[in-house]
Amino acid sequence: MPKSVKTLSERAKGIQRILLRHYISSETALHWENPFQLLVATILSAQCTDKRVNLVTPALFHHFPDAQSLASASLEEIRPLIASINFFNNKTKHLSAMAKTLMKDHRGEVPETMEELLQLAGVARKTANCVLGQAFRKPVGVVVDTHVGRIARRLGLTTAQQPEKVEKVLMDLFPKSRWTWLSHALIDHGRAFCTARIAKCEECPLKRACDKQLT
Image 1 (cartoon, rainbow, N blue to C red):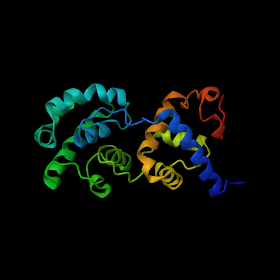
Image 2 (image 1 turned 120 degrees about the vertical axis):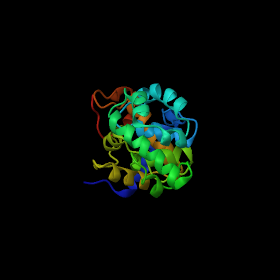
Image 3 (image 1 turned 30 degrees about the horizontal axis):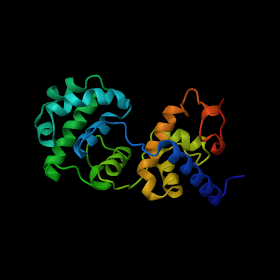
Image 4 (image 1 turned 30 degrees about the vertical axis):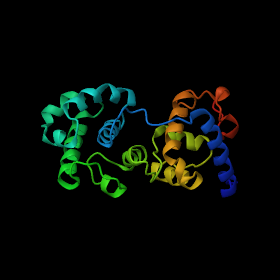
C-alpha cells in the first residue's frame, strides 16, 4: 500500500532532524570565491568528481578570473587548462559560449534567475540550482545528482528515477529554507554511508528512517 502524504511528511521531518545533527554545515565541495567561479566549477563538475574539478580550477581562474577574460580567450587557450576533466572538449566550448553570453547579455555578471541561467551554455537545472542556492542564497529548487536521487529512493521518499520528479518530491516534503542545504547534506551522506556500491547500513544514522536495508 502506498504511503500517505502525511506519513511521508512525518518521515521527511525525522530525516531532516537526523541530517541536521550530522551534516548541519554541509555545502558544495567545489572551491569558489564568487558567483562566476561557482558557475564555471559547476559546469565542469558534470559527470566529474568535485575533487578533480578543484584541482583544475585554480589555474583556470588565474588565467581567466572573470567573464571578460574567458570570453576573450580562444578554445585553444582554455582547453589545456581543463584537459584532465571528463568531456573537456565539450566543456571548453560551453565555458567559452557561456562567458560570451554573460558579456553580451548580462554585462559580465552571473544572472540571478533560473530562466536566465538556463539560457547559458552548459547549464541545466542542477547547475542553476547550485549557483542560485549557494552563490545568491536564492533556493529555487533542490540539486538532484546521483547521490540525492539514490538516497531519496532508498529512504522511501519517492520511486521516481528522473531528477526533475525527485526534485519535485523533495521540494514538497522539505521547507524551502532547507532546499540548498538538503542536497549537500544528502550528497555528504551518500559519500559517507549510503554509497552506490556498498551501503554501510549498520553504521548509518538514518537506519531507522530507511526503507531499504542493503547489508
